[in-house]
Length: 216
Image 1 (tube, rainbow, N blue to C red):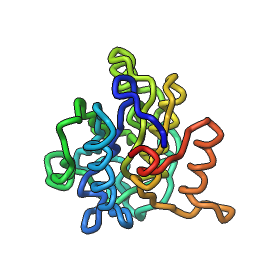
Image 2: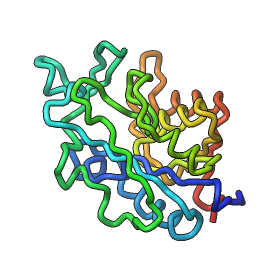
Image 3: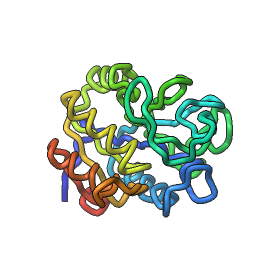
């Protein structure tokens, strides 16, 4: 069992929104399972949490619909680098873009909205996809005295992975709670997929992978 320091550890809840769950515009298989897992952690382990919220304006440039002739899940070059094109999702002000209504909210002390700039997508809780435009989360965590960030949510191979990676690069310890996340696993050239590739990248950076039962 891994001990939680209730003063210096914080739980990051990544994009736990209906838009990413069955019936949503960008559904992740079994995505709704992260809600119960997150609630167990919020009620039983962590005194502090933050959440991220994908928050796109209509017509966002990461949407396939914004690129005539292109299809969802194609990869194109944007000024900031490769961009996977997504179905329209997490539209500002819609019920699908809200945090999941069953998420136990009392420990959530900060909500970071991302992807609201029309011309640039945002996976990480810390940076937009240009890798330069900061959300301000790192400064918040440092000022609050947090040292270690645990991640749960959606999707493991995109927003969770990018957030964990940037946490390490920002000087924090990062832990991914695997069974409190779900991935997309898009195929990559050469037979790999985005989920296995992200896991390898994070392990090389020193990110720790644990389960809910390791913490409770």
